[in-house]
Image (cartoon, rainbow, N blue to C red; front, side, top):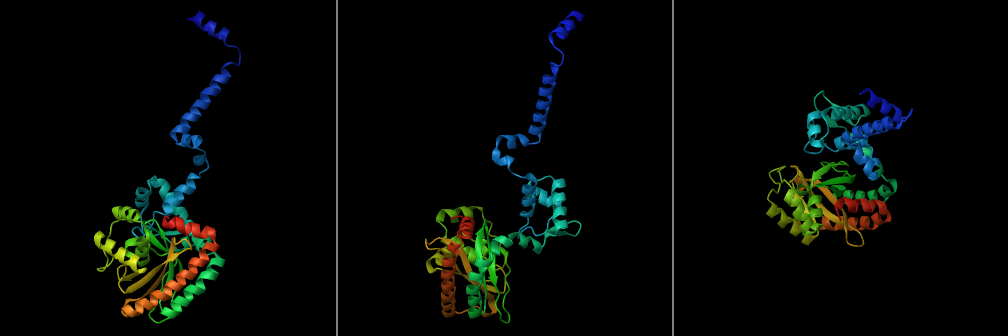
Length: 310
């Protein structure tokens, strides 16, 4: 045994083992990185450029929606597939920054989150062009006017002009409503291809918001066909009692739908059929003007089209 060890000692020169131990250390580090999931980032340049903490924060932020206005850290953890401890730290960070509040158990977002979309919906040049058109609609119809785009399974208000009239309904920028129960949402669905509508309905849960909500998929298809044929959609207290809405598509020169323009009013004065036609004409004229304006801002129009999935 001693001779054997002696032969090894003579064969290995002084310092020759240092590269070996260096290699072992590198192997140890690679093993640790593989266990932590970093190996994927090493292989994929796109992953290497991602900031994982930001990605997790955005997952937590977007976990809140109309069905999950308030959640515990455990709720958010389950919804985002993130560890509960990490989820809690992110929620507490959002609270510290003013984007969320908590009562000690439940967390909910604050209106400050709308600041994040300021550069998107607050472009002064676009606002300066669009708002006068929408203000004229609101003043003529005595109803609030909103510009809406599709985002996933929801319709989102990106511009709003509230009517200056007694009993008028106020609509907020950032309001998010499911497509099937939203008047502009049904208008958007009516303009999509049959395949897109089929895909949406295959996944959609048509839960009732009011007794007037259409929850039968066959019936909804019929209403979409009517809206497509007549060029506008009308809603009567489907989403919220006391509201009615009329929505028309906003299209570019190529006929692509990029948004919907909607008038929202008090259901106590739902217009007659003749009055509906007059209101539709006002809305269509305004939508045509907006459809001409938006292509001037190619980036903005592209975002709208991407959101609409066309």
